[in-house]
Every structure is written in structure tokens, then in C-alpha cells.
Length: 120
Image (cartoon, rainbow, N blue to C red; front, side):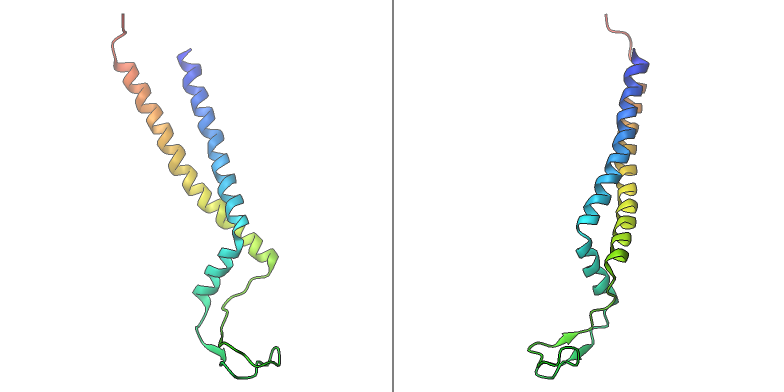
């Protein structure tokens, strides 16, 4: 019976491992706009492309605010792929830490139970 209980807990932890990875991947996929903002922030030069009051060559209108360099702008399929890969990597790290801690605690509990004298 003890063997069944311990292994059923481990089975739940192993299922949770893949569940955590899937949740992180889905969460990052839903927030892929934030990934685009982070990429743009890190790759932007900060240069002013069109000063305030100047004519914007892209639109032909007077720019009311300065237009800054947007940095790297990914297409939708590329952004989706990058977000899925980032979600899998982040989820894998989080799942390894969470499930590794749970399995460690279950093993410690099992070892302590093996060393305790039988209660009467």
C-alpha cells in the first residue's frame, strides 16, 4: 500500500510538471505583445526618426510628437514562435524547480517514515 501511495504522488507530480510547462507556454503566448515590447525596448537605438512638427515621410502628415526608432519589430508568426519557445523554456525552469522541490519533500517524508518506530 505504501508503494502505491508514494508512486501515485510521484505520478501526480510528473503530470503537474507537464501542466506547469503548458500553463507557462499558454500564458506567454497570450502576452506575446509584451514580448514584442521587451524586444523593441532592448533593440531600439532611441534615435528620433521624425521630430515634433516635422513632416513624417511615411504618412505625409505633420508629426505632433517625436517618432522614435521602434527597434526590432517581429511579424505575427515570428512573434508567436518566439513566445511559444520562451514559454516552454520559462515553464521548464519553473516546473523543474517546483516539482523537484515536491519530489524532494516526498522523499524526505518517506525516509523519515522509514526511520520512525512503528506506533502501537
